[in-house]
Length: 199
Image 1 (tube, rainbow, N blue to C red):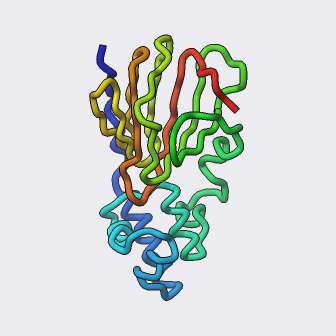
Image 2 (tube, rainbow, N blue to C red):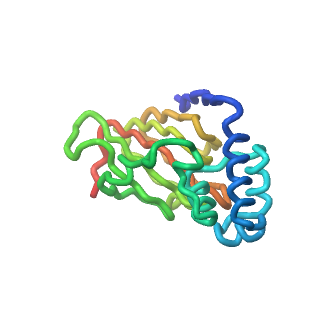
């Protein structure tokens, strides 16, 4: 049985251009050039230029880096209350999971027997340690919150973008990576039953 793909929600139009306009205004107010913001944030000049013109999207991690370069709060940029949208994940306990360049947070309580949810951040170029054999009793559900994820299941490649999901019925061999050179990927892994290794 092949994994089932869930179509992504395209989201509301216009929000990227609004964010880009605010970023450009903040940069102009500070007197910084695109090159200076790129150097301070570690992102490319071309990416920031496209973002300012509403031609590209950025993960929250990239927006934080740009805001830091501009001495601008993320909440001011997004015109939201001064709280981070991923506060729950930030304070959740860490969980172990094979991979390079990843941070995993356990969102479900320890000992919860029905299923397990991990909030995972994969840095640019982060990847699994080769092909990993999944427990044949596991059902996996992967949902990409931001960024992109390349997922290989039994030799079949799947490219997932923000808002897309993949269900892996049982077992198999899978590998994954973040192909972006600049942006983090954030995603939810759901395991049923829970994986054994946490903490």
